Length: 236
Image 1 (cartoon, helix red, strand yellow):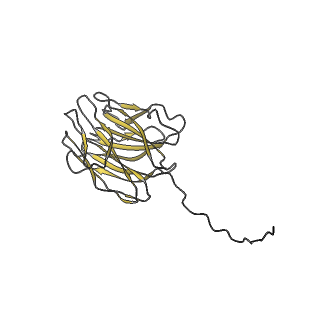
Image 2: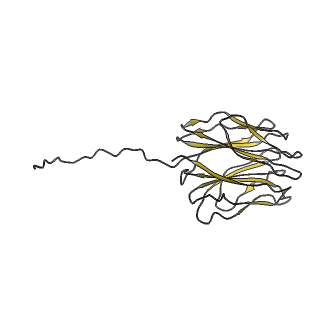
Image 3: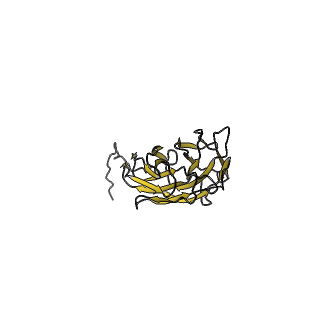
């Protein structure tokens, strides 16, 4: 069964906050995979701190920005709100945006097939790293976050028509860390295409990453030919 996007939730408080809370989309089910993408400012390179039970795909610092992506296979009781913060011991009021996307029919124990991430090199442009998937029928997610200290209203634009937008989120207030999440299906195993996104405001390279979700395993091995059988004729 193909991996399916179920829904998303987002949070972007006005100004700054010491932490952000978010809960799964109301259509979530046990066994779904949740992908959280969060952004904070990073004057001291403080990393995003997830709640217990979440696994980091990446948690990286760039020019005034931290972008972190995390995953969890949802279980009974996971429909509640969770709190996300950063590792700062001073000036902690820097959490800006967070999103959670829910996917169904990903691999039940190892949903992340391959990832790559890092800080970009070009202002206002997320040049997503290419990865090499090792299984067929992956869903590839492209995530980015950017440092924009003065201008609100940032809007992301995909660089290729094949990208489906799942998140385009900015906070309000005085400092901004807009984020985006795009999605694309990849039917065959191999290198992902060149993909990018741009934002209309800001003056710093985004932090960005690529991850491939693996589908549920499908047993396509034919049954072995039986051996050791003896034919017996039955007379009527």
